[in-house]
Amino acid sequence: MPYKLGKKPARFPKELAKLRDRLVAPLPPPVLPFGYGLMDTYPMAENDTYGDCTIAGKVHCDEVVATVLQQPYTYPGDAAVLAGYCQLLGCTVQQLESDPQQYDTGLDLATVIQAWSAPGGFLGSQIVGAASIDKSDYELLQQALYSFGFLYVGVQLPTTAQTQFPGLWHNVSTGQPIEGGHCIVLNGAQTTVGLAPTHEGLNLITWGADIECTEAWWGNFGEEAWCVIPAAYEAAKHDALTSIDLTAMKADIAALQAAN
Image (tube, rainbow, N blue to C red; front, side, top):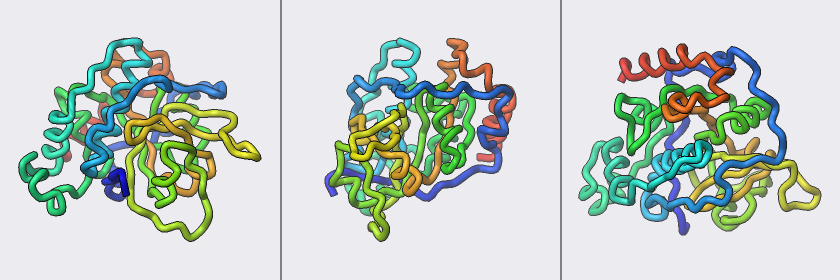
């Protein structure tokens, strides 16, 4: 396949709560369609060479955050991305490049969240909170996406997704082979996507492109969704923070750091 995956099975650390348990006020209902960073150019971040999709997804989240806050964004560069990937893999870049079959094992999203939330952050940014959203809770998924601008998510990718890229991911026929786990970033939602009959859909970023999937596709292949709170949102006093218990989410992060 022309592009790489690399997400390990979903892992939900006991220290991190579900988003519904960290709400102190309802998130506003989304006004469809909406999207964040839809006109941006996203880096591949080495995900066509290595299974670093979880790191590429983190990079894409950072770019959306900068767009939401109307701040400049500078890609840390492929060398920094590979160094960060290897840091979490526990190998050197030289080892990864010389023997990818042994060392390019991929990561789970929770491992990246733990590094991302550590003091000083990871690859140039830090998060101060993280909470999961049940993959079937589409209402909350849309609300959180509308309020925060992005979600860091994982899917079990069918092989048809490669052939449909960079178009619309919509094939939900039964019996499709699953190529493996993949990390993507959700950054918008639409009332219709390009099918007849039309279907509600989501915008997503992967492999350096902003594409779409149908709600049904997410329902079939979505595995995990995380709402992460950038430190930059706290500094900017982002409106959406009034709906969450950020103090409790910070305590969750502190517990996660203490456990690792």
